Each structure stands twice: as C-alpha cells, then as structure tokens.
Length: 89
Image (cartoon, rainbow, N blue to C red; front, side, top):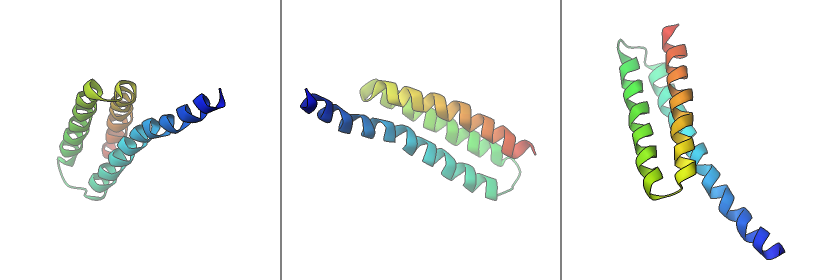
C-alpha cells in the first residue's frame, strides 16, 4: 500500500510544475513589456498572452489535459488583468 502512495507522489509534482512554468513565462514577458514603456506595447503583451493560451490549449489535447487547461485559465485571468493594471496607470 505504501509503495502505491510513494509512486503517485512523484508524478504529481511534475504536473504542478507545468502551471509554475507558465506563470514564470507570463511574469517574464510582463516584466519585459513593463520596463519598455512605448506606445502600443500593450498590444504586444496581449498578443503574447493569446499565443501562450493557444499553446496551452493545444498541449492540453495531447498531454496533461487538466494541468494545461488550468494553466490556460490562469494565464488568461492573471495575464489580462495584470496587463490592464500595469498599462492603464
């Protein structure tokens, strides 16, 4: 019984890392676009957010369905709300 529990625990961590990696990528290009205060740069960030969401949805078809769908939702919610908050001020 303990062997089954030990085998399941290592498999859960890599799946959660998918969400962390997507958030790190989101943070990286948000910071990059936040530093470069040029006109219409918000369109560039919105484009990258849309591309990342599309990649997550396509990846959800093939591997780790729940994790990539959750990543797409998190990137959508956090990405566009951060985009509006950073660039509207």
